[in-house]
Structures are given as structure tokens and as C-alpha cells.
Image (cartoon, rainbow, N blue to C red):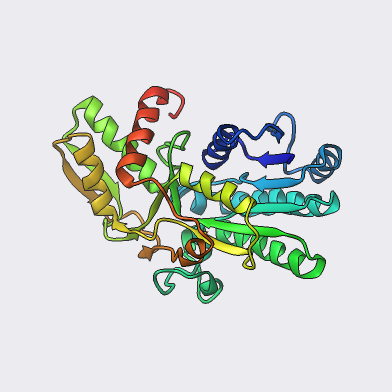
Length: 308
């Protein structure tokens, strides 16, 4: 099988690449931004026509945390729509047999019923701070649905929950909450700070998944025939932000006062995915929070100069 992995240098894409190599897949096509500008329709169409992959995995996207999503909303909706439109329609034009589109759990309504089932999509308003990113992702999965319906293609959409792991983004303003907490806690440890400041109230409930589980799900479903085109990928377990803070503080053996900056937004009050459909198809996550954190923190210590 010839596989084109778009976004192979990102958090999820790099994990998928590692997993494909580990599983002895030989015919993997990758292209960085210098080789292929995914915003350029003609270049993407020409690339897919020339390479003729059997499978396309879309792990490429512009991503960021609450601050970045809110500040640069136009960039998020434009770039993500452009990337996925080029790759999905380009795959169709090049007769790609199967496509996997990776989305995000932020596609679901802000005040969705919990745990979130796939059928709750478009049942309410989105979280305001990342609505433009979420709208682009919803457009991507609806595009896959439409092509399946009209052209009988085999395009599936995997919706991961909050993901963390090696090669994450630890930027002070642009990162997601879990890597941001890791970086802040590590800085407290290194600089002997007595206070750890956390955005928001600490009350929101969040689910996190180790990135290797996402990669495993991707490879599992690329080989699996499914009737459903939209499948949640998560752990089905949740903790409050306060509990995650306590977990990381304990792991790093910190003695700090935790201060919650309530002037900063909380985001969605609760977000945990219902993963019963993925389980029905035979997939389940393998990594515990302890295991995933240990691997992630070890990678952070090794590469933190690159993660500034």
C-alpha cells in the first residue's frame, strides 16, 4: 500500500509516521512545506496525480490553544479549509482508494450532552474561542460525508480528544492546556518558583489521550471497513484542570502554591468523548495517563530547547 501522510512533522503526524515504520510499512510518502505547499491547490493536485497514493492520511492542520485560536481566527479558518479542500478533492481526482481525515473534539457543541456521541454534531453552538477552527473541521468531515454519499468513496473521519505527547507545542501562548501545564511546572522546578499560575478557574473537565494511541487508531481504521464515517477517538476518562495540575505537580515533586488566573477563559466547561463506537469496531486506547506523561516529559527534557 502506498500511503501519503500529510503533516508528518506535527504532533499527530510524527506519531503516525513512527507507528507506520514500526509496523514495517515501506511505501510512505511525505513532503514538508518546502516540497509541497498544501495551501496551493494546483501543487497539491499535481503532487497527488504524480504520486498516486492508495491511502491519504490528513494530519496536516493549523492548530493552537485558546489564545491563538481566538486571536488569529481568520488564519485558522482559511488555512484549514484550504488544506483539507485541496487534499480531499485532490484525492478524489487522483482516485485515492481510502482517506483518513483527522479532526478534533472541538467540533462538538460547547454545551453538548456528555459523554459526547458522534450524533451530537451540530446539535448546539460551538465554543466561541475556537469556533472558526471547529467550523473548518466540521466542513472537512461534511466534505468527506458528501463525497462518500455522491461518489461512493471510502473517506473516514477520526475525531481525537485533547492529544499530548512527544513533539508537542509548548509555546507560552499558542499551546494546548496539557503541554502548557508541563512547561509551566518544569519552569517552576528549574527556577525554584513558589507559585504556579494556571489559566482559568481550574474547574473545566477535560479528557486527554496520548498521541501514540491516536496513531494506533489511525492505522487500525485504515485497515478496517466501517459503516460509520465519523468515529470518536479518546479514552472516555476525564479529570478537572485542577486534577491535572495536581497530577503534574506530584509527578515533578513540586512544592508550589497554585494560583488560578480567573481573568483568562475556561473554554468548554466539560468535554469527554463517548468512544463506544470505536470499541464496537474493536479499538481501545492502550496508554495510561502515567505512562503517556512519563514518555512525554522525558521527550520534553531531551528536546526542550526546540520547544521554546
